[in-house]
Structure formats: C-alpha cells, structure tokens
Length: 315
Ligand SMILES: [Zn+2]
Image 1 (cartoon, rainbow, N blue to C red):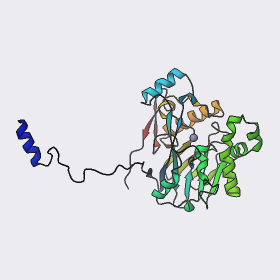
Image 2 (tube, protein in one colour; image 1 turned 45 degrees about the vertical axis):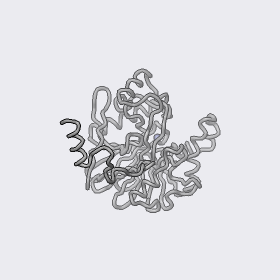
Image 3 (cartoon, rainbow, N blue to C red; image 1 turned 180 degrees about the horizontal axis):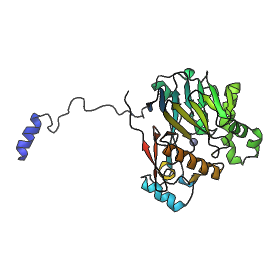
Image 4 (cartoon, helix red, strand yellow; image 1 turned 180 degrees about the vertical axis):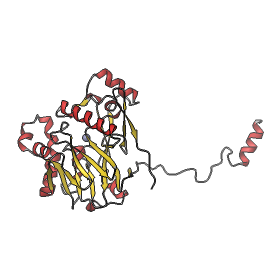
C-alpha cells in the first residue's frame, strides 16, 4: 500500500493520525486495588485476604550464600530486598468465621495493614469474625488483631494462640533479658494481650480448635508455632504460617532457614515433615509469605519441591 492510500484508509476507519478514539483514556487510578481471593474447600470457603507485603534483606536466609543467590536469580527475583507478601486466610466453615493470622497492621510500615479494606471488599464486618487463630506471635501475623488505638480489631472474636508462644512472647521477664534490638518483637504480644484479655485463649499444639480446623504441631520458628489443618470432607488445606518464607529458595531447598527461626534445627525439621506430608497426601498448602493468593500444591522434585498454584475456581 502506498503511503497516500494508507493514510486515506486509516482516516476512514478512525485510526487516522490526530484522531482521538472516544473513551480511550481513563484517569490514572493512582493506587492498588484490594486483593481478596475465594475458593471452595469441600463445603467450606477459604478467602485469602492480602494484608500487604514486607521487604526483607536476603541476608536473613541461613544457608550457603552462593546457592541462595543462585536460587533467587533462578526465580527471577531481583537483587536487593526480597518482597514477601503477607496473606491472611478467612475460613467460613458454615458454622464459624475463623481468621488464620491477621497481618501486620501499620506497625511494620505503610506496605501492610490492608486487611480491614480486604475484609470490607469481601463483604465481612470485623464484628462477624468468631475466632482468630494465630500461627505465632510475630508482628506480621499478630499486630492486625489490634487497632492503632489499642482496641480489639475483631470486637466479638476469641483469639487463640498456642500456649508456649504466649508464655514466651507474653513474658515481661523474657522481654527484659532480650537484647535491646529484639525487644520490639515483644510488642505485638503485649498489645494483643492487653486488647483481648481473657478473650485471648491458649491451646495445646495439636488440639482441634473447632469442627474442621485443628492445630498442627510446628514449633521451631517460635516456641509455640502452630500450623492449621482445615478439613471439610475429603478436602484438606494446611495453613503453613511461617514454616515457609521465601518461595524461590525454600521450595527447592527446604533445608534453608531464616534468621527469624528461633530454633533453626526445629524449623528445618518442621518444614521437611510438613512438605513431605503435603506432597505425599496431596494436601493443599496456604502460605502467608508466598505470592497472593498463596495457595497451591507441593510436588516432589530433585532435592525439594515445586509449588503449583491452585487453579482459579469460578463458582
Ligand atoms: Zn511471618
């Protein structure tokens, strides 16, 4: 086509230079949308609510630095801080609304603390939440139970935490003898205990907490770290809490730990046991710090596992 003919043709179809197609422009939104993802698990519904993310330096990984660099690069992660999402999981059993972990509120900086908006988008009022099961008392899982003013974010909920974590993180004595730079780590527990009082109740690792959700013993990351097995009929989902942090590193090489693991060997053994069980028994896993919505299956490969994200369901 000659240039003149081309110009004539494009002008006729409205594509000519200088013409603006109606409706082709929209205002720049200038912000992220709320992220909520829902799936069916047997007769239950599980909704991932994204609280945000935290950036963590790769130096927190404990293992061969060369291997770690290689795994991060193979996963396409840029050099520099690792961006870890903070997912929370809302389980509706039909009888109860149970929130598994509560995110970091704004206590960890401005990139987390969106759980309230995500709940609103999912059509849930915080007052409807019956129970909150915390995997452990680190801030990115617990701070979200308390408002900035120190009140209960979930005014009608009972918060459940395994006893060894409350004993450890709730102890003024432990806080006093912790190194100065570790003391802020006790603040989340202090605030939650103050806000919930006798509505914060302990349990023994391994207990069933409600019909269809039981604690899975996973101490290591913290003294009372608990995972949760959610089961409806044959369908099972294992909420991993912090038995998993960095997807491109710890799926392929689960023996690599993080500096936040209070018992390195314990944390390593927990991950090995849980990953083996999930892969062998084809149990869905739900991970706080894996890309939203953080739910998928583990498949044994070489020295570790591949994570296959769950396909989206429309229902
Ligand atoms: Zn965490």
